Length: 599
Image 1 (cartoon, one colour):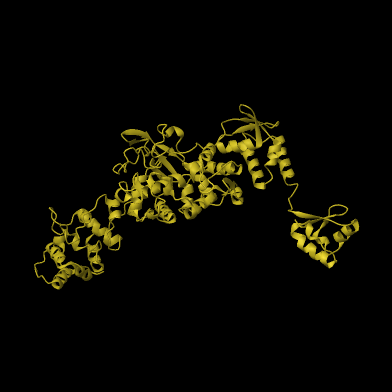
Image 2: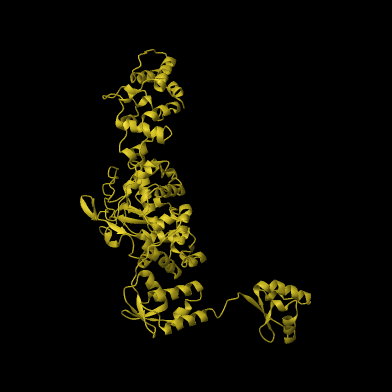
């Protein structure tokens, strides 16, 4: 839209009010004349008098619009960058009812913005007057700059810091093994883990969940429920979405890909988990904020989760890796860089406490909906996947932005994720987000787990991590205290698959404090030989012949011999895949296999 078109839309009274903002002497009242005079002045007149009346903030508003936003003014992005809005955009003073009504001198911005946009032919002139705005970089912190405590509800709250890359390197195989061993159940209809599954998974995770049972304040279950679970809740959903685990009734089992994933490089597996969660992960992360009601009602009109996840991932790609970022800074950068999404197209359909008085049409906004959704996505899923390191406090009163909403006086937090304070994209996250093409894992320094003797006795040198204990329990038996004994039968029983056989050997070699004794190496070599001595060739049919002569004929004749083998004086063994060819050969010899012989 050009300037003449923008002016022509206005009423005669609007045009008179605009003219008052200029030094134009012409006081004609015909609309066409006023349009022509104003357009001539703005496009070619001396704007110095008008320009000098602009505040610094207003000049920045013009600069951002004409240099960065194709002429439009973006209030959300502007406020995120400068922390305030020009009064013109707060009062919507471009309308005819606002001109000249303020007790302070009226803004001259209405001369340049029409329905929030600078006309196309006016932009070049304003671009020459308003300097191009500087980029505002993302504020970051180093490890040393990260505070030890934060002030939460007038109290100093310790800041917990977790480097998640080492955690997922432990947790992913541990959870896969726990599922492979059985006993991990989920809701038959929902696929969600129950309390027993959460306890079981938490027991095999490095350090347990982000929060422990002791972090829940008070014994009574208040409106928001307990803080945990977070990580033990996320893993079954992530693995199901990626096709590494599947439901069989209420039982969760590993798929063939899930078994293979135990041997995949960690970055390859996590990248797949992330990519599949982006596209297929369920349920909606918003469901984890139980205090936001009405989510399953038709009127909620929730947006597609895939779109929300893509927006947040794009915002993360704008962040520098390896630096701590305050969560509020991350939200500010999302707004500033236009990474926008809406959780719902009808916030009136969601509510806190009461559908009428607590409607989020009145009490919603970015902080309640979009920010809370981001917190779930980041803290429950990306941190669990080891893509972002996290620094967090207890959630109690950590984000008290809901306090003005009706009925929330008793709320101590709106979501269990409210305590997330800082995030950092680590090398694994940078790889999965596509920020780097090569992943270089952080080298872990770990003390040896055990000393093993020639008599297969294993003495623990330290407390096993949960995933180490899972493997240890599969192949050894406890004797007393720190003493265990390697069980040859157990090693053989778990060595049928080549991948698992290799994992067992790697575990024993890497866990030992010295080179393996010859007796242990001999045991592992023998297990390898015995595990590969037999091969399952698949199902077969056992055919009984009338007499030995018939069996000899069929096992030697060219039309049937390639498809069978002698299994006794009158017996032939026919592999299932060759049964059809064997029947055709019988037909050529004038014989037939009765239907009763079929399984």
